[in-house]
Image (cartoon, rainbow, N blue to C red; front, side, top):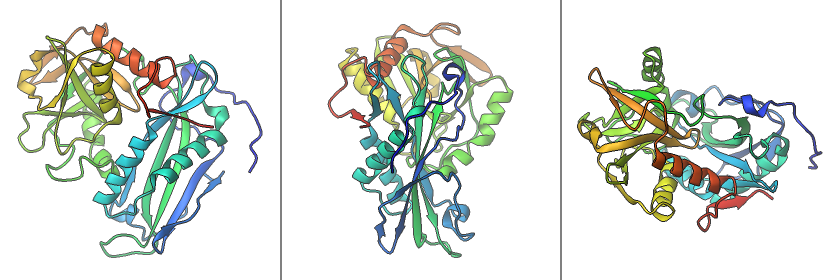
Length: 344
């Protein structure tokens, strides 16, 4: 298939984190024990059986990654192999067929190249967001794995997840649990997000950006910040992030752990983070593919707002982490080996 060069009429600076229909998306079917070759299609709708396990039993998972336009016009993906590995971990948890890493990355590159006009220009702060997903389909009724599966990838140009860009925002501790202690918290499955909709709405109505979930077993330790991971900078300049079997392993978080250690020279540690000890941190933030980093100005807990560095200014270490990671993603900073895959 030949793609003609085109331009799109988009105000890149005003993009939010919303869906924009692009020209092509990728779809591939698993049936009788193997994947087909997959195709690019202009059709952004799915026609599936009413008995599909994705609809009734939540047998589905997804990923999120971005394509970045560099200063010299190249387009690059950030650590897509890690997204592939995480998706396959989710697949194993839900008894779905794994997508070979080569197929996963190739599908992402095909989608990026076919929608090159939608990759925002360098310097706009916008990116092309990719959403790989895998769902159980086919005629089914009982609670069991699906007879067929659909793997797809679509894309959409996006601006910053939190409006206002890199600016401190406040969060509140939620009374709800994001995931069960030995459930699917470490898998990127839709049910985790469906359960978070109401706590998120409660937090927003109270004037917060989102809520923070404590560990479901004891409700004493910070686990996740809405749909992102938590990190804190201690008063002696250590980069700390929570560890738990029910936390989604954020690729951004693990990238920041490497950046903090290798680029900023900080001590890093994954460990339990007790909510009663949050005064050990002078800076804090939420991190993930969508938000990259959202500095946490304060956390409300038991009716009291604990303020970190500032309610109005980003902490200096958080700013360095953000600038370095974004620099790697946009081709301005030399990346660690294997982190960047060029879409060519």
